[in-house]
Length: 161
Image 1 (cartoon, helix red, strand yellow):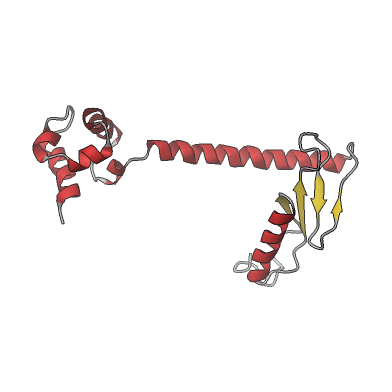
Image 2 (image 1 turned 135 degrees about the vertical axis):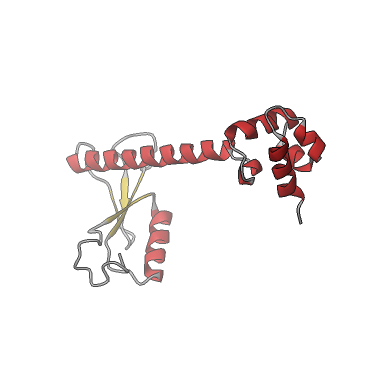
């Protein structure tokens, strides 16, 4: 927003920044914004109240240290809870996607010409990426589904200086 709308007339600046967290998150966001010269965007942090498990007891923290709670049946509280829950759902989904990609990631992904099936064949034959890396050219050629040219590529990738 600072680059695209420095005069703040393009509608890209937020009317409010709602922070998922308590006092600590509020102070971190406030400090980060002040560090880049933004000190006039309203901030509010929403955190679970003293009865962490009970819906409707959220505490709203303001930059000046004030705290408020809304009535349990306030429509705006329901809206903010749904908003927070949707943010959590999105963040958890993104985290799961990232984690699943990291689980299947391997140093073999960096070797040119090695796709998922050859990577699987090499890992099934040698057990680990470290064992593939230290394998001789002859051993690489013995792996099922790995041609002499692919074995040479893998060997060169790990052994060329």
